[in-house]
Length: 438
Image (tube, rainbow, N blue to C red; front, side, top):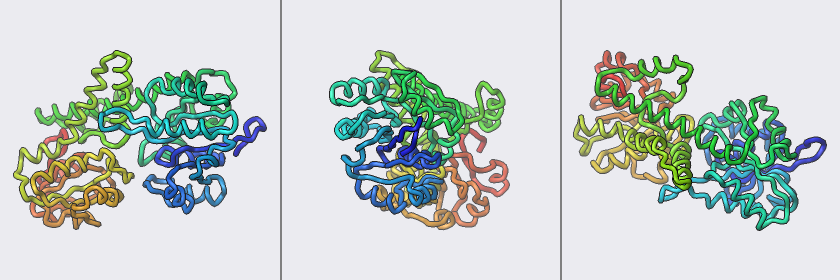
């Protein structure tokens, strides 16, 4: 609980995944005690012992400290969780289903639990990324199903896995969507975030929903754009690194998300672009630019393997895979580009050896037949080819001599441009990267 204008407020976080845990820990750091609710009893029991099921820098250490200070507690009983809560942050997952639609079932289950169990007027804050118009739908549900006054606030997150806690505490902006800009609930939510000392934009719910989709779609577009340019560089012998450096100096373009590679994976960008596409189509609009982002990325994801297949026979070869997580500083393999390519390589009866500092445990759950190596050296040992999918620092620091010493033949296909082309050439390594001369 915390006080706003002298009134005690009780805060509940619904969902204990990436968004929920970061929200809880960050609010705890800012001085706001919170209760975290998840219906999974095992997850809650582990959290009470400071054990988390995800890897996200800074979360585990701060969580343990905040539990000891009594600023974070956990609840798996639905009735108890929602009882006497003033502010409820809904932070559950909204994944893509098998039909390429956004699955909002977890979200609406959380809303139903809220409407069924609240015991007083409250503020319902939507942190989950939801289709356009969701907040308006929730307001209609509230009118039909609840006797309490519930103010719906859209408060999208702008977190990147691997830096999520830092992204929250050093955010570039806070978005608060509402149907009543001058209401007391808006003032309360605004005051929570005031300690961040960052710009706060107060707007309509629907504007807030679109800001989230548009922001992530723009970032995804930059990635797909630079990858398309890198393919052109490949064909004419240009160097994408120099091209992108020349672009970045224009402050209208900026210096972020312009590194060529094998595209984006993970549970966020593709999902949000897809959600935006679906919402646009439901409005009768054909979002051709958004659709091309997904199309370009799907092709780019297989850039390495396609290049490898053109150059070499893969049958019965031993292939070292460096990097399994969809990005560094994460153990998340959802929509992992490495996993997609491993499944393609398995068609050629390859012996696939893999290394990742964090994601091997999760990978074992879905591909237990792979040869898991606890060091880079073991992964490279007697391999015919090496494919790099994730730019972990441990991988970027590999000495070229380590490839030469351990592999049958030092042939590297680098999907993240981790190494200097000239240095690899001097070491007599066959080095293929993205958008740079081989």
